[in-house]
Image: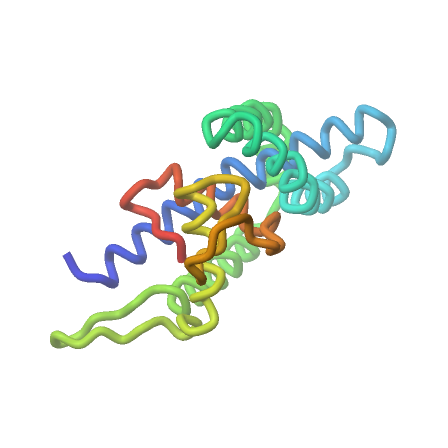
Length: 185
């Protein structure tokens, strides 16, 4: 199989898992916040809070769960939250016009094209952001393979890396779940 199709398949699977485990979990957190009276649970307000809370609130809790329980315990709350957030997310999705979904798909396609490697006539053309992604990919792979505490993926020194890793926990979960289909990029 060609590198391009391997990368594109992994990118599509990672995108789907991110929606299921991070975005739907964000909608569940928004639902819980609205039931606590923090905001009114209506249309665009729900969508805004749902999209915001998943990537911002979950990493802090995920860091603790990953330290205490490993990736399996880290995954369980995401699945539960995704099940809670599925209904409010579907109610919101139904109201979005089809041309917005077209724009979302086009943006996803542009991001996919920038992130996957392309092979043509026996030559491999690396992704546009490949050089910048080296550090990020190494940290994601180190988290997916070793968990926390994070060990420095760049230097062969003992001890814990003093590196900010919260942003990389969800991609590490996707890498861990995807096995050989999803790589750390």
